[in-house]
Every structure is written in structure tokens, then in C-alpha cells.
Image (spheres, rainbow over the protein chains, first blue to last red):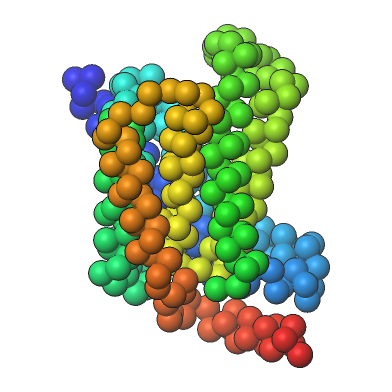
Length: 126
Length: 145
């Protein structure tokens, strides 16, 4: 039963942090290159554009959910399982979500990179 | 990729790994935090390591969002994962911890992943907001002039 709770927590962490990353990425694509916007319109305009974007605020909310799910998960299961499993699965889930929802062209090179980093993170924490 | 963009990616990597380490170090000094003593969490901010850790994590968030404004998510995430490698190198050469062979293999895999992704373009062609695209092009043209 404890193991089921742990894997449920991992699933929620991966879902929430992938949603957060995708929503934030979508918001920032809509805002535009912040470096150039800053030079042109100033910092306040950049902050205003970011805070006024509903995807940005939803992304922050999803990331907060991911953070609290991690805290709950750590109270149910071992950190040596939850941290590497959620981190490495998030890399793969992000590649899938970016292709589906952000329409990024995830070629063989990017798939290989995501899988290498996911495997590497899992090995580092093993 | 310009030097400024490499600098932003380096900022994401360094701020995240050093910020996390400082926060962990500071929270060990503060001690256990329980739900019945939530005031301890507020007092924890006065610890220099925790305070500096929070500043660096704010820096991470600012540089991460900046990177996402000109690069794909599938580029930024693997490209900034060198922080895991940095933490292992700190553990080995600064903290003098024993690093097992599996962890070195992990370092090798992450480095390979970073190498693969940084060989390609940082942004693939996609239109999420044509209005923002044309606005960005106008701003870019004006800045270049």
C-alpha cells in the first residue's frame, strides 16, 4: 500500500511539473524575447506582460502543486526512489508534452538528449 | 546562439545547483521544521545560507523564463542539466566524497545528452502567437538598427 502511495505521488509530481514547464514555456513564447523587450520597453513592461499572461500564472500554480506533491511524496516514500524517478520521468514527459502541446520539432537528437539526461539523472541518484 | 544566450543558460545551471545546495545547507543548520512550529520557517529566512539560496533560486527562475522566451523547452531542459554534473564534481573535489562508478556513468550520460541537444538549433519553427512573433520581429529589427 505504501508503495502504491509512493508511485501515485511520483505520477502527480511528474504530471504537475511537466504541466508547469509546458505552461510556462507557452507563456514565454507568447511574451517574446524578454532581453529585447527589456531593452526596448523596460523591465516593468516585461513583468507586466508576464504577469498578465494566464498561462504564466497557471504554470506557477502547477509548479507549486509539483513542489507540495514532492513534499508529501517524501513523507510517504524514500527520497532515493522519489527524487530520481520523478526527475528522470519528467525529462521524458516534457519531451512528449512539448511535441504535443507546444508543437516543437523533437527530432532524434532531442529524443536522444532527453533519454540520456533522464538515464543519467537516474544513475546519479541510484 | 549569441554569447548572451550562453550566459543565460549558464545562469540557469549555476543558480539552480548552487541555490539548492545553499538551501539544503541552511535548512540543516535551522533544524527540523514541524507544522506546529511554522514560525521556524519564517525565521529560517534570516539564516544567511537560506537567504542567499532563495536569492539564487529567484535568479534561476528569472533566467529560466528568459531562456524559455527564445528557446524550446526540449532545448532548455537538457542544456541546463549540467547542474547535476556540477554537483557531482563539487561532491568529489570539494567535499571529498566517494563517487561511485554508476554516478560517473550518469555524469557521462548527462554530458552526452547536453552535447547532443546543443549541436542543434535552440528553437524550432512554430507559431503559438503570430501577433507576438511579428512584434518580436519588429523589436529585433529595431534593436539591430
